[in-house]
Length: 532
Ligand code: G6Q
Image (cartoon, rainbow, N blue to C red; front, side, top):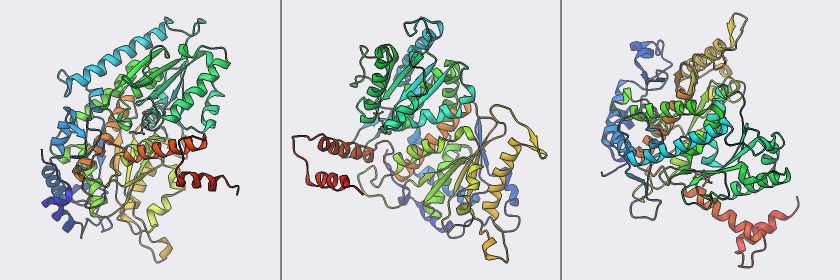
């Protein structure tokens, strides 16, 4: 299939013209016109996207549909799910791999899209299920007759952010006798803080690294192993590995168990592989972790729909492109009105910016316009008391993707001053959408709110494991669709690799490497070592 970028389509010209006069959300009755609030929403099995507060109308949606069709976005997504080699730059040295994170959860259908990859995922899940059953039954204990109740996850980047944000989101579903902690940063205080709060004899340590070579992770592993030894414990009885098959960490002698992930699963897309599943299944129990996979699998199938008005992740991707490439807004805020999702923007920050922060297209040519936006976010209502001032009245227009749920997770609530906390949360969320869209006129220039600040809302009933899986898959598919539209390779990360290489150079110099240090490294080190 000949892939092209949005800048070379005929729909692009239409969208440029339409962007001269986008829908005016500040006009009287604009949000109620044409049954807009009912018409501009897109439902999937577990989430609904409300986008009446975006600066779109039917003409824009039709042009976005044309864009999706011209670029064969859905066809490319289907091919990705079926094992096409998508992680590559034509004619250049590149990772040259399939992209099959979706295969990890394609377990609920008689005919998976990529049968071999799903069979591998099933095999790993079966091993995990047995491992957890052995932990639960006491067949696998700490050698002193005590069960493991705590897990420390050591990993960084893709081996930390996604799983950690999901774990945080689902803490309300954790098994009552389980605790999970994470160590990511090579800052020794990260490990010290975690180690200070756990009972090591009943602690499992899961070291997660696809490559098995990441310096931060290997260093933290040694720190924790040393702590185990100091406590009189045998590390190989406590440490498990989640790593690429045949990586340097894939060593059954050194670990109580080794679980595998595969080349076709990128780090930032690995939450539904063993990278996320070991931690989540330990914390939530196997069945709830599988429910998380089911939610993601449902969205993966829905994302193959050709009609953008019925394909939630595709529509979210295209609205994002409308805001970024046509209305010219450089950043995107993801603001969950759910405290449980407090780490989700951090995960999306990686997943989106590492995937689509690219300047070279899949043919090795410079891109012709903006690719991935700067993504950031924090939970509401906290953010309202902080940076929302800029969202409402700043000179920079920031499109917002709100996320919310009708019901809280714990159901523990109280009516105070005539409303529950959950009602207050949703009232604030809806108010923000309306305020950003319609703005406010005032004779006092300091009280003028220009409005026309676009937002949309992903709304669910309640944040359960299944819904969390769906939410993750929505964003993963959105990122993939946008990468296809810009015709970039969303699946490599040369920017991360460069940093890793240069850090090794500095470390070698700090360790007094005899092999000679280049002058930039040497001078840099000398200058930085001078006291303030
Ligand atoms: C993710 C990136 C990067 C990676 C980390 C950890 O897509 O490649 O964030 O996940 O550098 O790598 P390892 O899992 O190999 O330790």
